[in-house]
Image 1 (cartoon, rainbow, N blue to C red):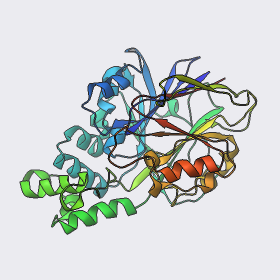
Image 2: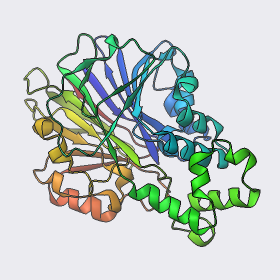
Image 3: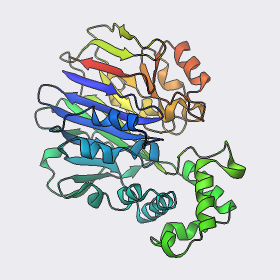
Length: 375
């Protein structure tokens, strides 16, 4: 059996899958906007046992609300064997690292600039090259246990397997978009910040910038001052990595038996019955991807009929949503949102369009968990 859980992290992302027969653990993102809250830390630390191993941690992108609790995850488990993340070029690393230094987030700066040092020598780092392809082709699968290097790169769309589970694959695709990052950089430029130096000088925050400029960076990031209510809500990345988790092809041995979820509307346990012979057991994780720029139905076309769960990107933001991929209906659509988030996520339009196309939007908040059991 596979347990797929969308954890109650609120405004952030923390999703896991456990292959119960052999205790294989997979995690996709681990963060929230307010990681200092003990309640948020407990969500992560209590999701695993101290002797558990995370076999693969997938990081969709490097926005704070998707990575800020990775340190908590590291402390909660025995070890993280490997991390799969978007491959960044040097200019991106320096820029993001400098931004996190300005925000006082030295650990996140280290994660971006040197993930090997951040995770330690026991953890393999697998970088996924960015791609502008519109459809994933036929790429040979790669057993992650056969990777010997501490750091390696793979092509977007490469099916990743683990020994003994060749029929279940994880397919990351690193789509690169400059729109969000350019918006943030333009706002910095308008405040008189030298964006060029932020991209090229790793020590710029130590020697080349004033306290006033640091405050301006923080203001633009958080949407303060003249940008009050207009911040980038953490979106300072060019990259967002999608992830398919599911069968390598249609097989009858996987079927939804039932799905369990806690809903914040009444804090009760609700059961949704799914056709027990359904083959749509795969999940597509989207991080903060933009469905207006990426045609996920075409991108994962060869697997589309196997997908029954789609994580709605960017906490249900209307700006990142396009309804076309949900036309055939029947999708389970979890989205992580904070009960009192300042961004008014999720958008009522997103919820309405999902319902109109006979899908099932599911809000995963601080009070609610969504779990799927696949037999």
